[in-house]
Length: 158
Image 1 (cartoon, one colour):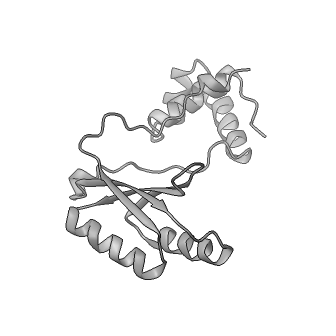
Image 2 (tube, helix red, strand yellow; image 1 turned 90 degrees about the vertical axis):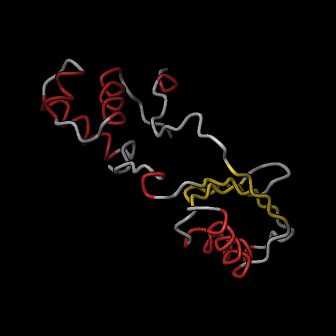
C-alpha cells in the first residue's frame, strides 16, 4: 500500500532526492519549515519504507565503465530451479546494475555497465556458464539521453 504524503513530505523528499547530503537546517529552510519537524518527517518516512537508504551516485565513465549494454534474455526454461539459478547468477554479477522480469516476448532485461565490448563478452561467457539461456540480445547504448534516480512525486498526490 502506498504511503500517504502531504505537500511538506513531498518537498522534503524532493530535496533529499536532489541532494541527500544537505544538512537538516538547509532542507528545513528550503521547505519552509524548522529542523525538528523536518527530522521527524524524515524518520517517519524511513519507518514507513518510503526512504529506503542513502547512497552516493558515481560517474561510471570517470571510473572507466564506458560501455552500457541492455541485455534482452529469452528463456525456454520457466521452472523454479532455472529461475533460482538465473536470479542467483544475475544478483552475483557486479556488472548488472538493474534486472527486470518482463511481460511479453522478452523474459528479462539487464542493464550492464562494463569497460568495453571485451568486458561485456567476459560477463556474457560467465553468465551462460552458470545458467542455460535460450537467446540473448545485447544492445549497446550509444548515448545516455536521460538518467535520474529521482522519482516523480507529483504522481503521489491524491
